[in-house]
Image (cartoon, rainbow, N blue to C red; front, side, top):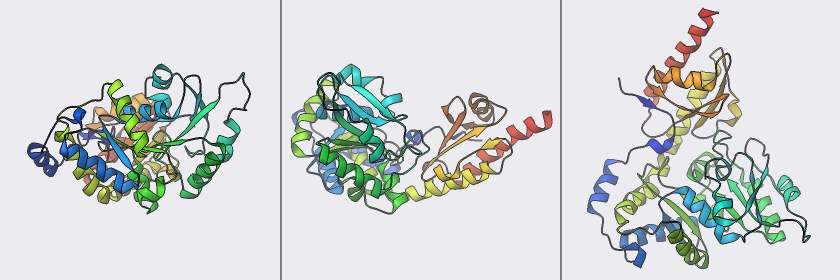
Amino acid sequence: MDTIDLRSDTVTKPTEAMRRAMAEAEVGDDVYGEDPTVNRLERRAAEIFEKEAALFLPTGTMGNQTAVRLHTEHGQEVICERRAHIVDWEMAAVSAFSGCQLRQVEGERGVLGWERIAAAIAAPIYYRAQTGMIALENTHNMAGGTVTPLAALEEVWAGAEERGLPVHLDGARVFNAAAASGLPVAKLTRGFATVMFCLSKGLCAPVGSMLVGSRALMERGRSIRKMLGGGMRQAGVLAAAGLIALEEMPARLHEDHANARWLAEQIAAIEGCRIDLDTVQTNIVIFRPEGKTAADVVAGLKGRGVLCGTASAEEVRFVTHRDVDRRACERAVSALRGIFERVGSAA
């Protein structure tokens, strides 16, 4: 039987429509600003997010690090949630590339409210590193795909504006947040100076992320992208798939959310698995096995044809996406039950 891949929504394959569009894409040299398909994707992303301009980048990490460089000076701090992507998965680039340090703050299920942020802002004294920016993540990957409510975001935007601090959003899965909240992405992101979002996760494009913001910031961002090695040439081949991802794929994300919720409820009923159902708000499911390490469960599932990952040494992570339907989820649950039934019988 086919392997079921629940490691991440990054494993999604491009749709047939994307493959055709890629083959037929009109291209030019994007470093010269002459790729018409890239230009069209950037204009459309800016329109959807109601920002002045957008920038097409090969990866989300490059988008986040471009934003950090845009908003900060060497020797400053970036306030973020303790388990944010820019903390764990971006190779210390905030310090290596922008010369800043991360001021990590514990959130509530990944949600970072203004009260906690305000307490972490550096006092205006000459012998302490000053706060340069605030970075939020919505949805929050390592918290289980949790969604920051609009009201909480509005408090952060207002507080940050009063303090004169720019706020960036790592919105790798912001379309999942929009689907879960029933709000357009423009409304969920209107107070951010910059927003990065991925085309290559649940939206199924093979490559690419976007950074949106003011025209002045995106013009500067283009130079930073080049500095990071992101100056692509006939990138319209990739942007063609990105356009379809942007226009067509958000409408189906609720299917991934429904499958994730079904998985979570089934896992909750398995003796030996602990899960906080309140964290399962989008397409990520994180649970704690009892009597086994997360690595043991990952290995056991792999032997049964199910691939998954870990969120920590004690936590297993499933991520639903277009290439995993309900039948595949049923098989995954059956495999998981088999692992824990064996533990029970051995005891």
